[in-house]
Image (cartoon, rainbow, N blue to C red; front, side, top):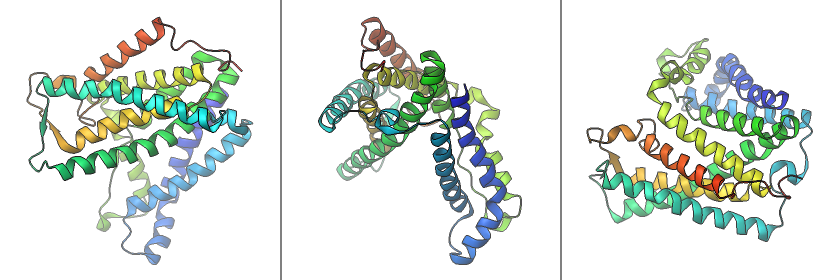
Amino acid sequence: MRAALWFLAAILGTLLLAALLAWPVWQVAHALQPEWPFHKVVSRFWQLLLLAGLVLAVRRLGLQGREDWGYDLMLRHFMRQVLAGLATGLATMLPMTLAMQALGLLALRPDFSATLLLNGVAAGALTGLAVAIVEETFFRGLMFRAVFRESGLAAALWSTALLYSAIHFLARARIPHAQIGWDSGIALLGSAFSRFAAPSAFVDSFVTLLLVGLMLALVRHRTGSIAAGIGLHMGWVWVIKSTTAVTDLDAGARWSFLVGPFDGYTGWLVAGWAALMLAVAWGRGWLRPTAVAMR
């Protein structure tokens, strides 16, 4: 599992380094632009460190070429798979919104309007595209390829799915300007992991994302590319973001336990649906590897 540890180290190691260097970095940034909040300065600094860490991991693991990145398809075939995945993603997540509505879990926001709906749909599409490209390239592209090559399919499936799910629960924290000090970076890092002190509060969403991660990894293995995964991922995020942009979750509804508080959408209902889709797809042979995927 050396490959998986390299990617884990790239994330956790750069988080720790960003926390340790947060105070001097913020001092420089604050002198240049006093309006920049501490948490944003540290976040951008961590992103730069993470990029450098990933470059180092990619080089050490010998990942090079389009195949290792998951882009080993001609453009027209790649786009065809993206569009097919997008259509499938929309078709498989929309029923969840309809089911939540039918169960009385969702209510239109008081300020609902056609403009709010159009803005929500447009923002959902853009967010879905950006998230899908970044996360599929990292998890199902580079990390999956490296772990699969070194340790086989099972290790690649579970390591990418577990890390993919866990990273979503890093909390966003802020420190008031008056309280910023030399140890604020460590405090910010501790706050980022605060959710893991009470895992029961998000276990339903964690299971949902774990199942989704397994499905996306199997799609990557089946097709030998991340194209279909990008489409699926975009479609799912598009529906979720569009739904949460125009509705509020009714926490007092009879079936509210089916939707977790983490994002107001994922939870046991979506987890059950993801498990069903995974079982059907596996049973019908849709996720079994092809000769292309085994290269």
